Length: 212
Image 1 (cartoon, rainbow, N blue to C red):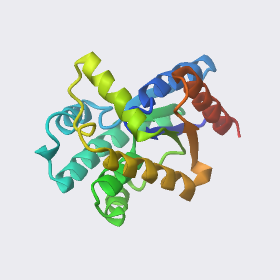
Image 2: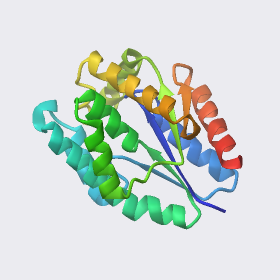
Image 3: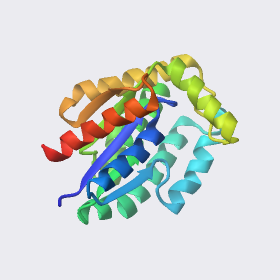
């Protein structure tokens, strides 16, 4: 069976982690060999960078440093997780990938999209997912969900959640722009519904892709 690389993108609080878990379980139940992973993260080095990038005050990192650290985590992730798994015929499902860099560091921080794409091409040989699911929800709703999750869980990963609503609105628009520019490689899922319904829509979209 041929391998595949699937990314799940969206604003904070759109339900990505739950969708990834449902996709992994659902695809395994259909006899696919699946790897669930995340960015930043996926490797020991990436997880260490995740702790630096998502915790603390937003002013901790200059935007260019943030971009380079996100890219460094991605280099490790692609080389040690994504490419070996796909080559072995496995389905990789990642909670975020380069679409988030275009959205957060590009549209959000105001960094050059051309620079981000050039860096991506040079560092990971321009590897893009076979399919990207964009979980679309009003950023105000997503932020409320995400801030509650972090607070309830005592999780120190709220650096981006500390930014204002306008920042997160730019993120949403960036994801929708990416999807509109490459509709054959994207599926937009309405993430305003109940989690179970959103996850079911996501699984159906992935199944359609894998069987086409």
